[in-house]
Image (cartoon, rainbow, N blue to C red; front, top):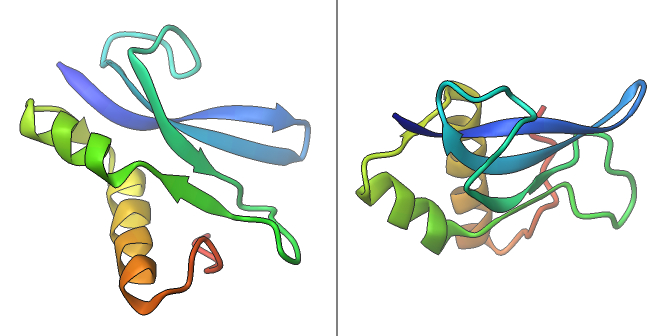
Length: 93
């Protein structure tokens, strides 16, 4: 099964996550099919905290990919921020 989930990057105590499409049996930070964006929970000031390629998310969900609960919430919040015009500015922690 194909899943859309977060893979962790960044340094110790400073997490940075990529939205990735991967096979469910692969390791969290292992091989992936495609990267769809990023989530930076430690973004400060004018830094962008989240960016997601919504068109590609819709494509993969249409192909049968499942989103993890955290990814589902982040994508929902990102869609809402696009409607209100606030780009990557929310603190979605």
